[in-house]
Length: 383
Image (tube, rainbow, N blue to C red):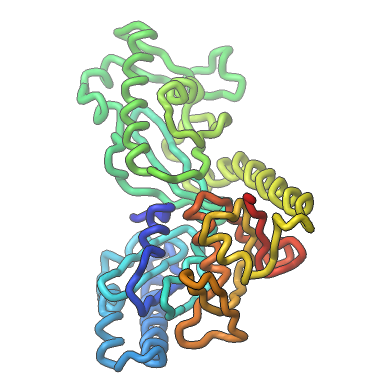
């Protein structure tokens, strides 16, 4: 599965060749509803073809452009183990898709650039990761406020202690069994080691965790989302000693994660990360109120879009489910607002959000009533 990171955002927004087709739709995790999902995608592809023809493509050219998406309709393995939502991006020479734990509203956008605003929940303030550690397995999850999605076999991350150390005999020598010693105030699994010293065991675990950390460095790259550890209590401080990911939360989920469902892991992880997200958003809103009237804030797309493009936006609030159509000429640094969508126009809110993220700013995709001054978007400028 491909997760959506700033690298992916950069790929989608760096000079794509028009026309760009963005398709969003909800999907179902239950395989018996696959046919319903395939039918929905077929209808959205038909809608995209009509939009491409309105854009100026001939029917044959529109059908050819959408062929990679249409090819998914009969790809039975593709429809197994789905998540809650599917996002597809098609342009000449480009086809990318993401399966994510968000039930997107069905949407088709054809424009000069890809429409990425529905993905802001994964870059704009409430995305996180969960790393579940045990002796027998390592599981990595990507999450949002809506749920967790397992990331299958991330490259470079060992799957188990034996896999990391290439030393199967260690599993036989180091035996873990459940205990209820005085150190387990919550009844966590206590560890008993046989055949080697505690220091030797910690050293081997540290080597194991350093290999996991190295794999995560390669996999997460520019991700800035919080990482929550889940594992038996004695493992967490050892992993923190090996960790180099700068967004690891101090508090983790204690207890053996083997056999724990993604739903239970999400419930426990969200309880840890939600206050973190809420504090950040409240601080950004307070900053907006503090600077209002000083020239350091704006709710005008004509001012915000160029500022975002040139890296001036520090915080951006953007209303989800709303669009402001228009276009932007970077050469002339001019924004034109359109009362409704027309050929060649795109969502200015989408552009402002993408450029803010690419320049290291923070984006809060919120309900319209939560945007300062109840605007469609509101920005705090760096200068």
